Image (tube, rainbow, N blue to C red; front, side, top):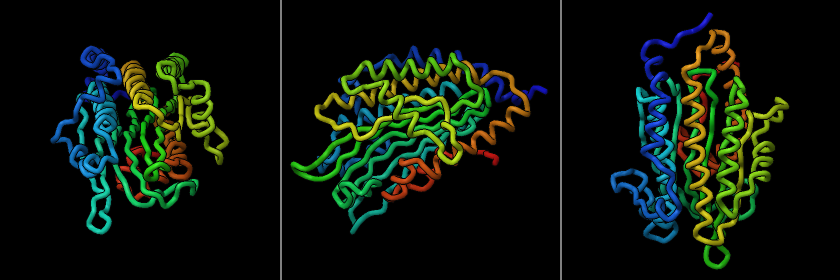
Length: 328
């Protein structure tokens, strides 16, 4: 038996391809020099939260602008895919230390007939003691800033996806280190080689556009990282993952831009192709159990979840990645 989305959901899904095409025409690819000079709106809560770090020189305007551009681009992609979605945008503050601010973030969560739950979060946090998972550099001053995205479509024919980009600065003076990390992966329940190939081709292109990019290495890193040991299976069909890449020159950050832009286009195209595909009640139930695998990884193994909790992040923002409905 085929399950029909209700009239509102079907209308939204049918317009996704057209809306996505319009999104592409409105958002041509930007280069690094363009994005770092695209100042955030002063009314944007993240701009206000980042001011102490900007004033102290811990964070550069170019870094904030690049992260903000990637967040805004992917937020616009979601709006194109689900124009009827209801958005909830909330800002949060990391607890102050002795009366001094330590940054915060902005959650952008959409719930709609096409995107059952998707989110594009951005944060800028700092503190006197780096909560190193590996214990290296523990106790040193740090600043972490990034964009984290997760998407759980309603239609089980459309894949779950995750993407994030981040910068991390630890230490002071000559001993200070500056790293970048990020990546993205696709978790389809119904696997289509067309979608998998397109997703990987996009990230391969992103890596080839930058001197720090190493697609074979990042792909293998992703396969190893997004593996569920207790299940003995990968989380999905992979993508790329990279971490602790040392920043040696300003345009090293362009790799983050490449990842963010290529993801928005590749995942947007896959969603536009799949969200109006008919599906059965049995497939929908299978999707809810499949989501359980995703939740297990994020709760047990995900380093981003652990770092967020260890650094005093916002609980709601940290667990925004969890599915809206799930079965075990």
